Image (tube, rainbow, N blue to C red; front, side, top):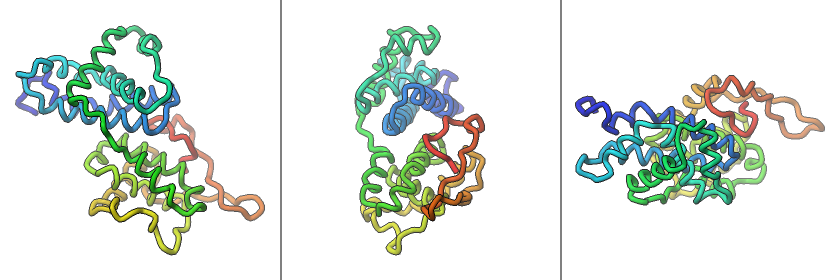
Length: 262
C-alpha cells in the first residue's frame, strides 16, 4: 500500500484495526452484549477493511468507504450496531450512542456509516464465529470438563478476536485452540479419549499452530507465561480445585474477560 495515496483505505487495514477493536470491546462491555455480538462485530470490521483495501476508485461509494476506513471509532460503532441487530434482543438506541460519543457524530453520521459498511461487504452478513463453533463442541464435551473450562474457553475466544496474529486461522481452528488451551491453563485432566468430542469435520492442519499462537497472544495480553497452568487453590470438602484469584482488571490491555483469568 506504500504507493497509494495516504487517504486510500488500504492504509487503514494496517493502522486502524487495533483502535477499532479496542472501541468495540469497550462499547460491548458498556452494553453488556454477548460474546457472539462482540466477535461478529470484530469479524464484520475485518471483512470491511479487507474489502476496502481492494475497492476500486471507479466505485461510486469509494470515497465514503475510504473515509470510513480512516475513522476507526465510527467504523467500530457501525459494525457493532449492525451485528447487534442480528445477535441481540435489544439494540442500543442511536441517540444513546450519540451521547456516548460526546457529540462527535450525529445520528445521521452513524446511519450513513452503517450503509457504507453494508455496501462495502455487499450486504454479506453471514459469518460463523468461533463462539458458535465452541458452543456446539462444548455441548458434546464430558460434563466435568465442560463445567471447568466453559468460561475460560469464552475468554480465549475473545483474546483470539482481539489479536491480529489469529486472523489467518479459520474459526474452527480458533475454537479448537480455545478449548485445548483452556484445559491446559486450568490444569484440567483430559478424558482418556482425549478431545474426541471435537468432530472430525472441524479438525484441520492449522490447529496445532493456532494453539501455539493463541497461547502467545494470551500471554501478550494478560502478562502470563504462555501455556503455564495457573496455581490451584484447595477446594472445600475435597471438591474440585478452585481457580486462583483474578488479577486486577486495570492491568489488562483489553476489557477483562467475564471470569477469573488465572
